[in-house]
Amino acid sequence: MFVDPCVKLRVQKGALLRGVLSSLCVLALSAPSMVSASPWTLPQHDLVVSTDFSFASASKEFLNDGTNQLYSVNGQLRTSSLALSLRYGFTDNFEMEIRPTFKQLSYKSDPVLLGVLEEPYSLDDARSQIIDFDSSVIGAGDMDLVGRYNLLRSKFLLVTAEGGSKIPLGYKQPQGTFSSLDFESAQFEVGDDATLGDGQIDIHAGLLFGTYVPLSRTFARVDTAYNHRFSAPGDQVLANVKVGQYLGQSLILVGGVRWAKTITDGEPIGETFVDTDPGQSAQQFDSSKVDVRPLYLDRDYTIVELGVIAQFEHIEFRVAVEDVLDGRNYADLRTLNFGLSSKFIGATRSEELPASVVESEENDEQQPTEEEIIEEVIVVPADGIQEGTTTTIDEDGNEIIEEVIIEVVEPDEDGSDTQGSEGEDKESTVEP
Image 1 (tube, helix red, strand yellow):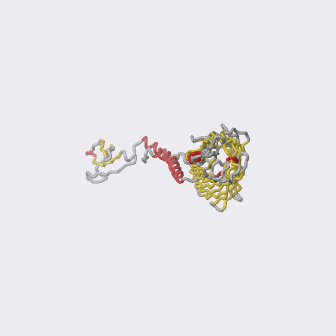
Image 2: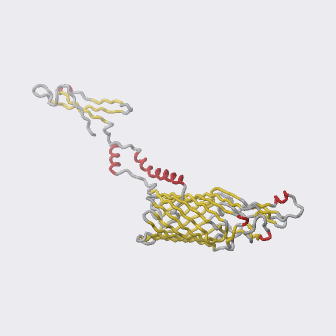
Image 3: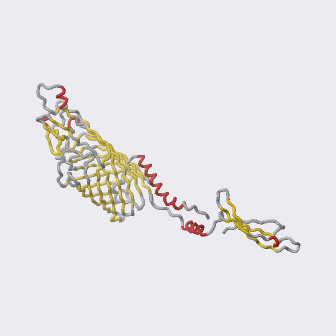
């Protein structure tokens, strides 16, 4: 049996190539996933490719003291983000995830005249005192790197340890609303507090708990973590609770709460202004109602989520809505999420040839195959013996060895050979 020596190499590479190509196809579809940060770690060699599309808007914000109020002069915040995630199981108990995020953010409000103009003043003087707070930015945001190790996998409970880091991807760091502000001299210089993230590194460690009730087909998970924030912000404690209920074979109803609380005092990064009368219009804006306060990145939030998952063999589609109930230094966002996750079982597992094929391949290397040697048995009379070998070249340029084996046959009483008439050849191809 002839086996192409390249077959084994192609088979070993085949699963990996299929996984990579399929992953790229999923990324092209661009949608989110519900499988991030799960206590159910992936089996070894499994790969999950996920995407998240989020659209959010806010017309209110939570101040540093927790007050929830409108953005000044009809301010509106709009954000959209795309998060890509790759999770891979290195063993049945250990997995890693990489999750870069790309964002677009814009803030628009009515322009205002904050300066105090003294008579007489020109139109150019008035225009120079008009402040426009509109800003827009797009680009790479933060990237999360996370590792998870399963500590306990019992019939009713899973416990998984998680550690990870959030790293900014080179965007401009936030600063105060005004980089310089002097009401008396009517000198203002608008800063840039609308950015793609907080511009600093976080590291966190925590535990993930999960359970599944087969009788009701209900799953629940609770995540807890401590988040150390470098630079200006204070450290946080984090919690996440999520419950899912199967509705039929493929539909899952999911609800949850995410919570964060800053437990150490951070440092201000600049100054911002707070309109104590956010309902006043830009045309009648009274700068005496503006307080200048320190700007902090100490963020608290309580976010509720409700969504639906459509689950198929290796693909899950997800739609969810989120609402911020409470917070501090956080936008009062309403968010719509769309998602897709796809699982590739054994994406990098090598597929080995069966033992019988490998053994046959080794035997073929030690002896010629029937395509390489043709043995020809010729029956001739005893007085016409001729021996020898000849070589020929086939149309593909391969050398073929023709070996002539002479079998001596004594003539019978009437002078004819016992196997046939004189000069008659009999050919047969023999398996080596």
